[in-house]
Length: 629
Ligand code: MYA
Image 1 (cartoon, helix red, strand yellow):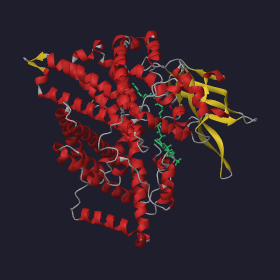
Image 2: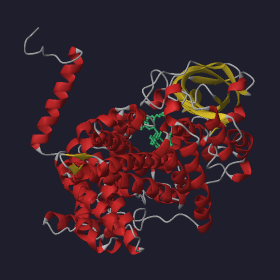
Image 3: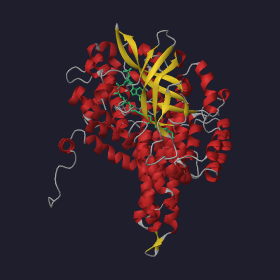
């Protein structure tokens, strides 16, 4: 990852060892732009309601976490009550995941049934032919899909979560009126970003579109790889470099286009032979002198990178919702087996080893689900700063689902390894979820770097305040008080007690202390490394782990406290799950944070860097086996 690029402006802003970082620009151009502009002009740091962004400055921001979001209006709940059972029934009775897998193709009756159900246009407004679902409603249906067939899920998701999402988010009224009825009416969509030399480094794409001499078209040339729905899509969101004028010079910037296969010059390769999600169609797509009308520019010339990032940001919670369903289904299989299989004269479920596995799977499932619905709920209630939380939900869900299904196979033993249980297919299907839509490694760095950038902007504000103390006495006193309390060990952390059920209060207090410690650690890392922090990936990864632990702990405590408040029958179990998860999260956080600075960890990072470099240089393990044969 070009960490250096993610924080390019750090070069401009970091003076010596003083941590001065710029505002995260990508957050500025979102809907909050207008609201934030005046404050920024005054030089004040950007404020955000994001839990994770604020965590990086040691502030506990509760707005998007407590209470747990309740985004469904009565009619939306009613609609879901009507929609979920037929979709469940369809996946149980019509769709055959193992046939789809072995044929590397979704059966025709399934495809037809899904179009009939409206499953390809879940969030398209009704006036354009869709079901007009909110993010939370969408999450619930996607959860059903994820529980049954991830390959079908990818066909649906590549179409609407990213394929035409750009038209929903950035399309003008004419583009919406022209294309949304088509993508709900039987024409597939695809999201075409990745290229042979551009995977994680999405900004480095080489496909290029230049304006035709008459100014009426862009002429697109280039190729894309690993495009889900690439062979079947008629309508594509394609990203390409376009020349633009900047400061009197011509530079290339990415632009997003709506491309129709019928424009001519668009072709696809054969379906890829994949490890999993086999029934979904994945191909290369080639563009040769494709004439794109200028009215098909999406989101403005030169804005394509941000269009791409925000389509991805907007869809990531869907993956968490789907994988919550996958985990729920695996847990059911594992629990049924553990409750019936007898070995050594006892049911498996009576052994501590199996109890721990089931408990951990349940914790992971509960946490994934809590994240998915927290992010979708926040999006539905108008949050604009959710990109870090969405990234965390994707990372956590895909890591957890992998672990949970692997453990389900372990509990089923030899039976789990047999195709008949379906778990081996699910494990194969799951592997890609840690890779696509932003690899988990890239997203962890994204969380850490974006959080650090935000913290840096606040430190910069403080520094400005000290230059003109009389004008900023309030800020200086509150900050000085906070730091003094920390220095003499009196800082107790923000008080979460009013937000959580009594059972969770001790852990909530610990989380508060961890949040303070996270902020202090970020500040210390900035002071120690200055602009070099962007290249300290061993440290960035520990900060990301701490952030993931903090957000997940807060999410489960919030959800379980809601259950307790509403006296739900599941409340005692939910509280136990939340307690168990938060206990481990707040135990890991101090260790992750300490690893960013203690000499032993730093020595180990240096060792690992050296070892990794040596392996890469040798093209594998440099040592022979002990026999040297
Ligand atoms: S599709 C392919 C997915 N590909 C990726 O996700 C690519 C991953 N790479 C990246 O995300 C970026 O390149 C990174 C930045 C993060 C590495 N939000 O110079 P920069 C702004 C908003 O720092 P880089 C697939 O897999 C930034 O502030 N803005 O960028 C589908 C800056 O702004 P400015 C952002 O170092 C599979 C500008 O952009 C963000 O090059 C099928 C440049 O930034 C952001 N996140 O790299 C899935 N990041 O210019 C099917 C950066 O103003 C779906 N910026 O300073 C299934 C789902 C549902 C399942 C359903 C099942 C049932």
